[in-house]
Length: 223
Image 1 (cartoon, rainbow, N blue to C red):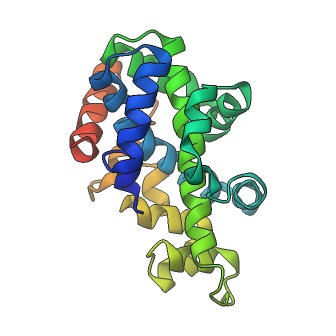
Image 2 (image 1 turned 90 degrees about the horizontal axis):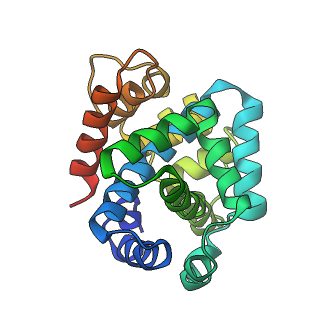
Image 3 (image 1 turned 90 degrees about the vertical axis):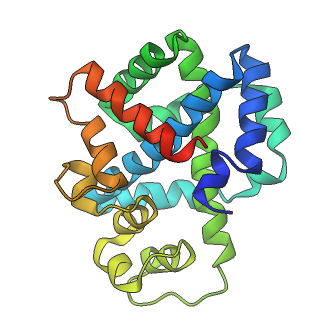
């Protein structure tokens, strides 16, 4: 499984169909939100993990205790239950003060009300965390290097050893996104997905610019 499977592969297709039925939203609009949400969530995790060792440790602990990847063994249970308060809290932890910004921009782009957007995000968030947990479980038999769990996760996610050890979990998530730690927080002229998402979270960007960034993200992943 790779990150695109969460958007346009088997998992993504099941998620979009189930979200459309459960929340009563148009399938194309559900696909748009999912295609934008997954890279936004990965980038938010990247930024949070890079802020401090405590933040990185918190993400790792959440993966270890609640998101080991088993969610993919019974996706029907997640979608049959629908969005819950606990899943909404995951979204809030990911996006922090940007949570309302993400919801409102997606609402403006799709025409879905903010509550519908919140429901979709709440169903996507545990899939993103479960993806990271699944990758960790798949590499559980490998020995950890001096970099600790960051290097272990980096090895199973395909991150280069040097980049993973230098940036810890934040660097690993940056490798998934194709951007660096710094780019996730502050966009640069270098391009790449990390920079694109960093632009979205830039407080100086207006709503029209943010909407254009969402279009670019869905164009990259929503095919």
